[in-house]
Image 1 (tube, helix red, strand yellow):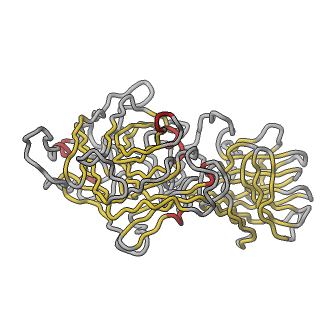
Image 2 (cartoon, one colour):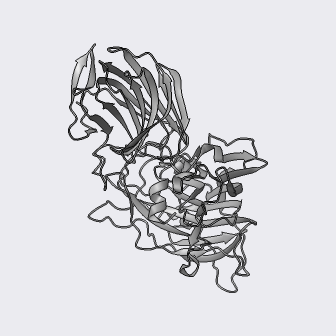
Image 3 (cartoon, one colour):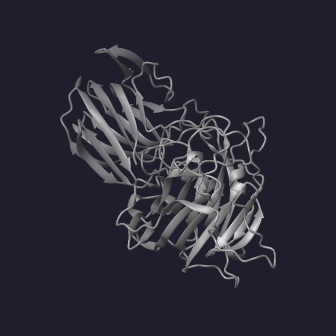
Length: 523
């Protein structure tokens, strides 16, 4: 997905994603070439032993996959559910697990309106990403691409992140293949909208702050059309891309239709800002459809309306002689980050506090406790740097932003106030979800705060005593929020306002302490 706005959504992604297994290694393929590790800088000659055929007039006709390309990975979706040994379900603010289904020999991704919101949070698509990673070779998808309301974005593409959370900070450029993407365009600037189907290749860098930076001075695009010049909407076709160090060959129904030079030469020399690029990147395969803009969708579309389904019959990856070419890599990639724990032995150095709040770390019962020491005003601590726009530099080895997660902590209230608890999907100090112990009302509640306005969206009575430790857990999956107290689900609610964000601690006019924080990415 080459547009910066789309990339910023899908990487929260993470899409996320998804089994909570994050970055399970560079490659888990077939043969010795699939082993993780750093290969010597080279042009991956194994990939060139299976060079694309000539498309010059008079050249012999060929059919893909070429004989030298051997299948390494495939799925024909013949079961009744997604094969979770192969796939993560996409996790992002604009996806929903329930929109992904397998049956009748197809993967289906549904696209729906889920609320009356006129923004993207009112719509949900879905998708999957492969747990295995690949590089140079041939990628092919058999699918029926519906001609949807403009704004929907079915796509078959690759990237380094497999969509599981939390997203590690790579701080180096990587390749993204866009085998095909549905793009929305304005017809003659009139705003009515139209769609086109194209593909290409880009590079991007997940920098030291965990932000995605477009790193591509070249953006070749290929327009998918049949030989008669018409698009392929609503018809089953095989879409393929043969990716080598020197060429990109686009393949429709087994026939090469265009070959162009690969503008990404491997390895690209290093720059002042990054080391030499790893453009034969270890890449996960993604099959997705999300909404990228609402401007073509009318207000009269009812909640629950389906815009259509993106249906996939088969996906496969073929490598030269069945050997995945090793990636060019100067340094190892970050390891998995599935669970983050905090015992405050470092004094909560990574937890931002809102101005004016007062906090201290003390020892209690042999452990460390982070305490709010003022009973006036708001007291917030959020994991990661300050909640500012643009974001402050990130000092953590992962991006401290979650879409689907479980956050838990032991919370002890001191005296009676307006309560305290756990925050989730916080975008700033005025926008977040909040699981609250409220001693004044003797209840536990789910609260959302949107542009400084707080609303209780679910609540239930609970006897709350000063000085008693309570184990709180806030679970957010897709659109569903659930609050637990001491292992028992107490409150739950579907809500659609925030798609992704930070985890934090909050109290209002309340003395309290927090210990044993644990954040787990949910797959």
